[in-house]
Image (cartoon, rainbow, N blue to C red; front, side, top):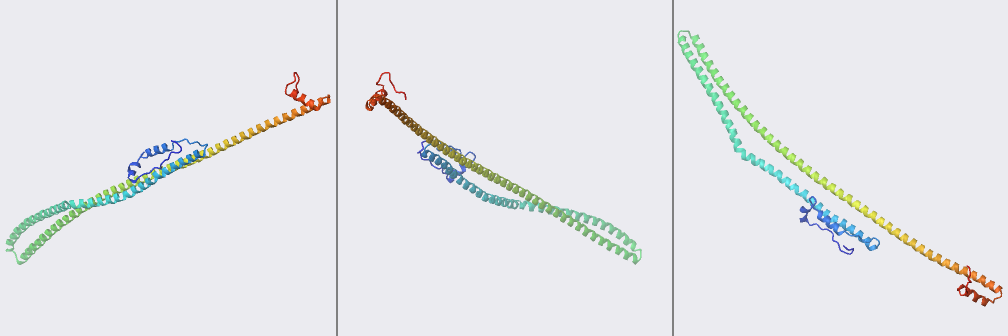
Length: 333
């Protein structure tokens, strides 16, 4: 990929969210970003350094382009759960009511059977009481008849006592029959109350079980929600740490590149100054050599003039010797 190739920031459409924001669902986008920034720009040029900064900015923009719709999708999921929870609560309440309404005929039938059973039991006890009373009345009548026959032989006082005894026996019979009826009614009432209490206890048990299930479901939902939020937070924190590390790494690399560029510039400047110094030193050496030769030549010229040569002739001789035109003769500088 060349430094001039255009690169595009990623774009996530809402309809893509369910298939992307799942485990490893964004791997293709990561691969795409890596491919887009797979360059080695020349850091020695301003254009190359600008390209590195542009590639790093692309990664940041792509990160935001994927993260923002992901956050929106996560909020959408949280909002979508609320109607489902409300609908499930309504469903449970409606089913409970429908269940109770469906079972109501059976419940009423069972209650009616309990009532009939209690009534039959009471009738049995009543019949037993009547049989006992009839037996007792028969025995009493027989005794009264016998007593009556005897009473015919006794005085009026005995007759009155017999009549009183019969009346007392009748009162006892009536009282016993009423007591038996009262006991039967009490047993029916107690059993009916016990049956009703059992039904209430069973209803309370079912309600408690349903409440426990609902509470457990709510705890599970909250746990799942907390887990999802915790994982999302951890992922965001991890991504933020990676972003900060990437920025810090990019800044370090930038500073290192600047320092390297500065070092190269300093080295180039030192090399330029050294070259200038070398050239200057060589020029100075040449100038010094020229001056030295001039001094030596002038001294030799003066010596030749002193020896009797004219200055012009002496210059011709010095020049010829300096050029090596005089055999076996040279000037020592």
